[in-house]
Image 1 (cartoon, rainbow, N blue to C red):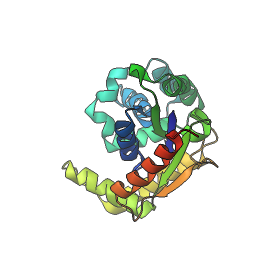
Image 2 (cartoon, rainbow, N blue to C red; image 1 turned 120 degrees about the vertical axis):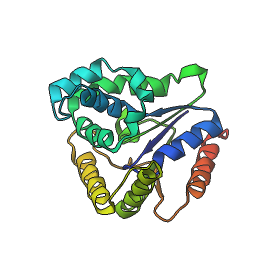
Image 3 (cartoon, rainbow, N blue to C red; image 1 turned 90 degrees about the vertical axis):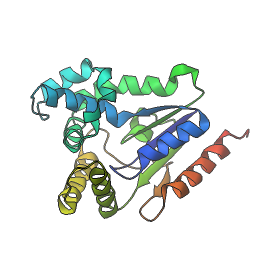
Length: 213
């Protein structure tokens, strides 16, 4: 089984994906981490993230050790990841890895959960279950600020809100694989929902799909 979860930044899709993978003992892939790793490669090398040839080169020889680097979750890495994710060459280089993960989950798992921006529309269009997780820009900015402050990072709400909106515009406006809800995806708006309620709703949908028809 393949579960595809898409949505904008800070909507809660990562938390939902991890919990579903744990509940059903499926493999989990945060596809956004792949783009963050490409971005972090450029940052560590002192290269501008908008340097397309350099980004494509980094995506071809991705250092998977970076996937566990603490700097992967820094705000600057996220901003840079949004830039490199708009590059056709980078997306093409990372596509095969993502598709293979869904079709052949590691560790002999019986299913895979992938979250990102184009899983249900491009990477796994034939996924068994698709979710589109979203929330208002203001709510997502509020969550991002709280998360940053919990790590001792000073964060300004207005600046984070502007960044959230800018990332949404880049993700939804790019020519290749823009962020959009797949026609057959279940919409989960988390603006006024706790993650437990979102998880229970999604888990019920998956369980129904797992039942013998």
